[in-house]
Length: 172
Image (cartoon, rainbow, N blue to C red; front, top):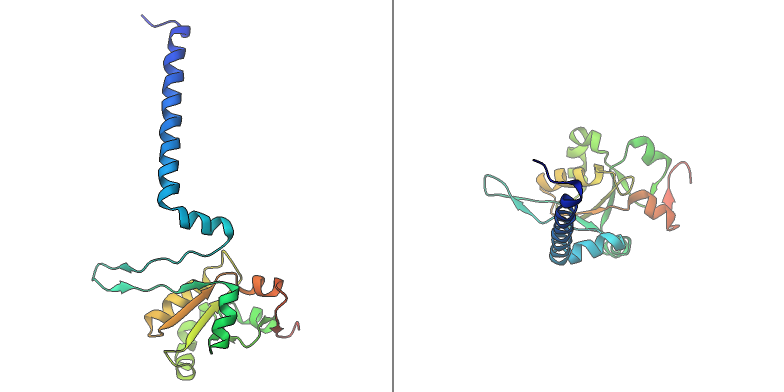
């Protein structure tokens, strides 16, 4: 025989309360263990991915993210700005002093780029802002091909433009 509906309600309430308590404890533990990352995300700062070991034991390298203020410091120290966007976007407008190396053309243009840019020079890659993976993907390729100091400006073209910083190109 089944229990009356009124008798099962306290059991259902208790089950729901236990589920809520478990979820709250899990969130508290997760936020505590990842506090710095969560705070960086809420303040708009970037979070660097740690190097990870591959199956062969080698370290997979990822470009370090940089913020706008760091970009200025690195440029003053001799860093090279690299635009990973399509050539048409670069021609229309790009960060002042940037060179074009579109992700889609990296295989054809990398040898020429390598002959002009020393492997130890600091390189800052950008594209169309947060959500645009081209700069990160290009950074991974450049690191794998021997460039030693590769950074990614995740705010990219939109953040630079919105800050009122100098641009070059046909639209300027």
